[in-house]
Image (tube, rainbow over all chains, first blue to last red):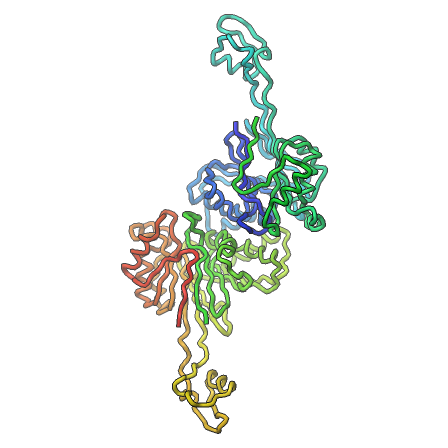
Length: 305
Length: 305
């Protein structure tokens, strides 16, 4: 079952050096969630051949342009491409007004339902839940209200223990019963307690997206032990004052948080346009947290079992 | 003195086939005017190394996204790049509300003056005038209020007649007097009527931008004899019904208008994404109006004296 994050854009503020503003595609069990949507995201979807109609939910962290100016274009392009499925947008309260005003100005009546869920930056909140995934927002601290997002795979079925079932004749219904945690009586009359033939479900995989934020050690409890953490690292360590002043983080701060929270893999992004080469940023991150990577556009980060 | 149009984007609706939505840079006497500003225009400015701070006036034809979704990004990028010069936006009334709402949502206080001039689609109007150029809007007919724009070079100074001034001793002040139409008494006491030593000014060059519109023969009087006409040709001739239904024009209609109005050079653009190859469109246009070209991105169309 897929659990992966594809980077569509990773620059801060202005598009520069071939890098584009923030957007990511989270794929969990072949369900697509778009996270942030900077200007030109629909062009990045073209470039990376994203099956855009699989996107039914879009999460916007905050209303700085490099995180949402591309949203209206995605919405109206869906209309031009004759989308019919509902689309739900999760974001700060003013987002709905901005989008509706632009639809009105263009005389656009959407043929598909467009729904808005308002986020707030006071406390954690469950935004989305289905059979496969839960998505929570949590407060960050930036110059305007901003949230991160936590993607949690739902605890899935128990796993058949191949060692223990060797030699037994299992019918399809027995597999289903075992996976769903029930005891079974096989066709030959033999009875088995569920846990004698199964292993516990895989632990649910988790991805935390920490968009623009100052260094927030208190995030530790929320992102504790996640499989994959995206954290902004707009500046290098020598620009810590500028990071503080603008409510951004440095490479070192992102790495320290990953280390403190015991995450498994860190990706950093939202690079300042002042950096042409990014390898120096990566070096600084890895000095503290070795299992780190740059959120380079086009890269896909898979969380394997 | 420069008079040229650079194409930054020429696709309709969705970015496709490496083409981007509408935007053009009009350069008259080294003054830059941006005309329409589809999503990603600021990235096109990067690609084509446009000196963006020379842009002080932006003209938006109408509020369909492929003509203005990139404007907010241009405005906020100017802020990030520490612009101080005023910027004036000319466009439909709702445009100011859309931009101001997005600035408010992002907590953005611009450091430079941002001015709005509302356009209307009822009658021709003089929007801008300085020593070098006049810019007029004129009504088009599309699904929402839409205007075209007419750029008219100001009638400039008289030209010194090299034949007639040969052998005369002209001081710098004599040149100025002659160019500005005054008679002169030279240093040797000889008197000359102005028109005995000068030729009339060059005729002012004109560029007409006809954004999205149905075929409008009555435009003829407005664009009569312009040096350069941009006219949309969203569809080929065999899709005339679709053009009519969507208030767009065909290749043939653009060419007929150019022919009727006696323009000197026609460029067509706003190509439907259904066309991958554009040479067939050009063939259809040139069958009726041979001096035609495609508004290919990156192309610059110069109007020479």
